[in-house]
Length: 211
Image 1 (cartoon, rainbow, N blue to C red):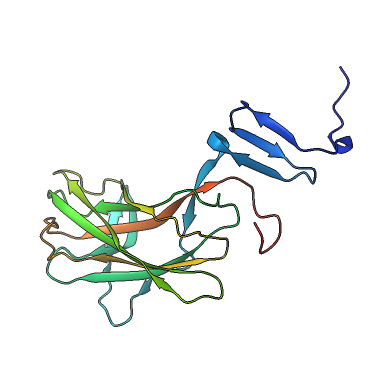
Image 2 (image 1 turned 30 degrees about the vertical axis):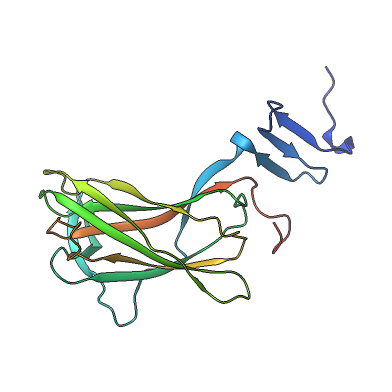
């Protein structure tokens, strides 16, 4: 059977199930997916964590986790609210209009039990536009006894569809307010990461600033 000479084709090629789930090879060779062909990946914050203005930042403490002596951010379980600040950029492979989930990776610092509550305070800044304040997201997670240093992954939830486009910024704070009535874990919470689950339908954008 002769090889198919794709260079000779002058029309797009669709590979899928015929019901809208497909990957399209455009005439330029560019790939785009739709339906269940859309994939997911992590998007990490843009730079190192910063203290949030004049507000109290979590302590940096040493913990031996899995035999590795590490310096980690520890959100206090006492009476003082602690905050860290960072931002995300909407990436070039984002599938416009699809949900973006915010999630956190953290560890209890002790074997105590209780509920922990974290907040995600955020704003959306389209390119060349003013920042737009958004409603905070939060979660409450039950920590069981004997879970010291367990790797826990919890979602804050999905960002509302604001018409995100590549290059838009999401500025945010992660906050623990241990005096909140829903926060009953009395010890430090080790925050390792906050990230986005991004639905992607291309391996980038067609042009530098155009999806």
